[in-house]
Length: 117
Length: 111
Image (cartoon, rainbow over the protein chains, first blue to last red):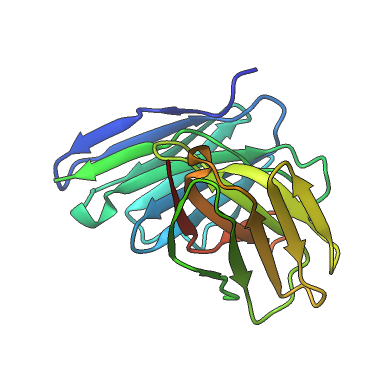
């Protein structure tokens, strides 16, 4: 079975440019999460969706970040305009939501390494 | 925000040694998960603990949840180079579905 798919795997862009990261969750999963990981701040939750609806976006750094989930099989995280401090690895994860909220398993994608020059 | 602390931050040991890493918080967890992340990949779930005092074993890994459900430990017996990675603990967040991750322990097992 295919796991969580993210694209691109690597992205290098210049400051001020728009960046769009993509995620395809595992089929049948009803929750989707976007995380950012840096050495300084660790793994931070940016936003998560349940049944395509954003539930908690309190981790989104600022208005330059936006996320959408138009259907159950696709989500995007957009940064516009990008800044050097946005450089990080961005992970998407999905969970089935069938084990109960206390024991649900998150399955992570391989991540997108973003470098903003 | 109820933060998680992990210790040690870094650990480098020789193959065959035993080790323990810790995850602590000032507040009670409803559940706690341990993940391992290898370089260039996303975290992978190792175990979920729910009951205070619970002990779970996964081959050479032993996970313990504190009686008061405020701390957890991961013990590795006879570490191998394949155990190298970042070990993350995570507690359930405020919305019942998201998880808050600790900063991790970066383990290096030298052959």
